[in-house]
Each structure stands twice: as C-alpha cells, then as structure tokens.
Amino acid sequence: MVFKQPDKNEFEQVKQLVEEFWLFNENMQPKQFSILSDKGRVIAFGRLIEHSEATELCTMGVAKEFQKKGLGEKMVEHLIRMAKRDVYLVTILPGFFAKSGFKVVQDYPDSLRKKVEICTKEYHVEEPYFVMKCNIQ
Ligand SMILES: CC(C)(COP(=O)(O)OP(=O)(O)OC[C@H]1O[C@@H](n2cnc3c(N)ncnc32)[C@H](O)[C@@H]1OP(=O)(O)O)[C@@H](O)C(=O)NCCC(=O)NCCS
Image 1: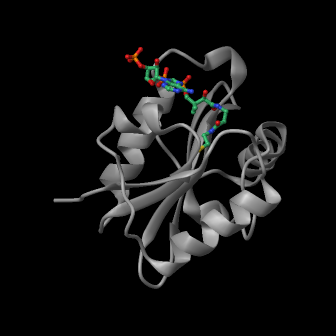
Image 2 (image 1 turned 180 degrees about the horizontal axis):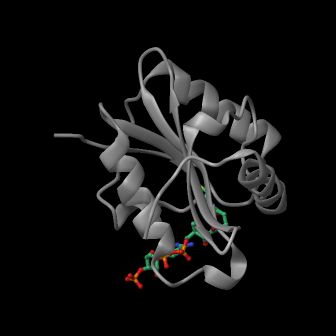
C-alpha cells in the first residue's frame, strides 16, 4: 500500500470526495494531502495542516465502497507517522480516532479552538464535536 501526494487529477478527485462527504475544505493544497489510489482512482485521503502552534489532522475520508476495510485506520496511522509534533484534530467520531491512539483533550491551542467554532457554525450536525490529541514520541 503506497501513500503519495495527489497529482493534479487525483487532487480533483479529492476535492469531489471532500464535497461528497461535506468535509472542511478551506485552503486545501495538494502538498498537505496523502492519498491511496487504486488504478488511478483515489480511494482514501487525509490532510495535515501546519498551524503556527500546532499540527492538525483533518479532511480525511475513504471512498464509500472501500470503507470498513481498515483503510481509514491505515491513513490515520500514516499521517501520524508523517507528523513531526503532537497531532490534534476536531471530530464527531472520537471512537474511530481513539483506535489510533487519539485522546479527547480539553486544553488545546487557539487554532483548534477556532476550528471548533467554524465546525459548530458552518458544519453544524447533531453530534457534538470533540478535540483529540495524539502524542508524537
Ligand atoms: C470515518 C472513515 C474515514 C472511516 O474509514 P474506514 O476505512 O471505514 O475505517 P476502518 O475500516 O479503518 O475502521 C477502523 C476501525 O474504526 C472503526 N470505525 C470506523 N468508522 C467508525 C465510526 N464512524 N465510529 C466509530 N468507529 C468507527 C471500525 O469499526 C474499525 O474498528 P475495528 O478494527 O475494531 O473493526 C470513513 O467512514 C469515512 O470516510 N467517512 C466519511 C468522511 C468522514 O466522516 N471523515 C472523518 C471526518 S473527522
């Protein structure tokens, strides 16, 4: 399984999946993303954003037909391996990320606080948002 940065065509596919899943889509740059592809088709993607005071994992997903096969967990583990400092994220799926070592935290940097505000306002859903952190050794 080879993780790579998306090329132009693959990045267009990532954008479509982001829209389909209604994921956070601000300031997306190809170099922030890692993907897995199968015969030219993007089947999993995820993103690390470098804020001045924190690294954030976000905008990740697995194409519907490929879900529940372990690819989501593999993508999270890959992004953790890529990170050079502790990784934060904002999610409504704490159970999924807990499997890869993320823990819910109450103390977190301002960039994550802003992200929670954006999610709560612009990506409003019934489920509550949690901030989680994974410590990098
Ligand atoms: C969330 C998502 C990335 C999971 O990807 P996936 O490839 O289906 O997940 P995996 O097969 O790797 O699952 C790994 C483990 O997490 C669990 N899991 C998967 N989805 C979960 C969920 N929504 N809540 C809790 N646990 C979940 C699985 O049961 C599995 O556990 P197991 O190994 O004990 O069976 C995928 O469902 C998706 O793309 N959803 C739409 C986009 C999205 O919500 N992105 C996350 C935004 S924060």
